[in-house]
Image 1 (tube, each protein chain N blue to C red):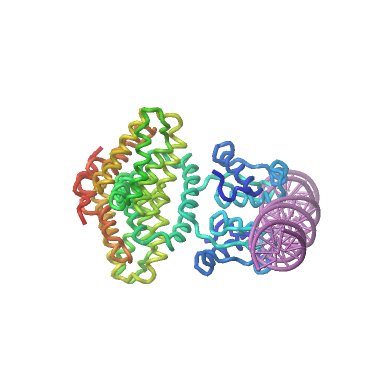
Image 2 (tube, rainbow over the protein chains, first blue to last red):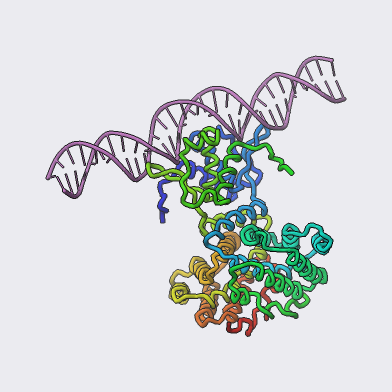
Length: 255
Length: 255
DNA sequence: TGACGAACAAAAGTCAGACGTTTAGCGTCG
DNA sequence: CGACGCTAAACGTCTGACTTTTGTTCGTCA
């Protein structure tokens, strides 16, 4: 069961010890660790080695450090944004060799189609206002205003936030950021963004009406249309998870 | 627009520089970086600071180090397992305060229900053999053999692997590992595992038959049953994304 | 001639101590 | 009463040395 690198390094041992104390709850968010001077004694390592261990944990957003009198090393709990940022970097690298744009869109579809339905059920007035702002701006595309990915991205993020399930944004946002960076370089013209704006408007309408079935259906149509913009798609697979009728009317009955 | 910590630390600057070179492709996987001695000169920092920067990147699985003559620091590309492991730790911590078990199960449902359908379409003979092994073992539960979470877990992981979309395992595996660790402590008896085994057997049957609709439906039933085992579930929301009829017959037509 | 083994060299890992930088609190002085 | 500056604590950085690991080289011996 020992990994090939069973020869443990000191900074790894220290990092593992501290991490265990954090994930088991022995150390709780906000707790202040002993100073580096004290930790070097307890862990029986030099300060340089100890700092490498602390660096591992702060990279994982499990610790934060502050200088000065009130400073020290504190236990933190990673935010959803932290996790999303890490995922974005990782998925970007994975997409180089192990992930196709079709696979990325597949997961997006799995999340965002039912996600649009959840948004329709949970959206607050504030959610609707923020969503409307991105769609209004997009509607002015013909007037020469700036309508680009950032507006599109904001709409999808806001919609996921309206679901009140933070995990959905954590998973989906990195995916469509990567899709833009890697597969949408200068391939989209004004026509594309105009159509996107129209489809967003329709989704928003159903979300405002509190009609999950229609919202999901409109999101499915939207993502299916996106499919034509991206390359190298396994069409049949996308149909399999987002095909006509899956999210049909009457599913989201009153409750 | 500058973050509160705009006061850049040296090790962060160095880490950012190297990371940029990696994500932009200037440094490619397998490339060997200059030795620490050379890097200290180029980056104009001491060796300790440089090593902290390298530790950040190796924590993110962007670099690996090896001692000895043939050793050095090499550019790596994170594996799906690396990303899944990180996600597991992060989601575990997020689930303490920001995520309910209902929200976790919600995302699992979004991924695994259509995932079962994909598995039914993509599964190889080897996939079927491996899946059958976990179900056979589970079927012997009455004989006193060990049937526990690890068997259950293996079935779900293998099913996701059969979809041939690596992202699905990356996203879903951390979630149900966290669900076990945080919400399933000693709450499941032999009856529970026996029922799980039966439901797995049915899912596998449909996957073997290449019937995506039936496989998805069986997975939906399975996850809905799990719902009764876990606590604090928002029932209406789970119905909304996995309710009766959503993944009904006739959806996954021949293609 | 071939195989074994010891010495070597390169690179990461660890240690020790010192100095620099940031920050809150406190006290003094105008 | 307020502003300035001193001070102590803690993290951040630097220097230089020693330790451990590991592939290579080269010499000895069968």
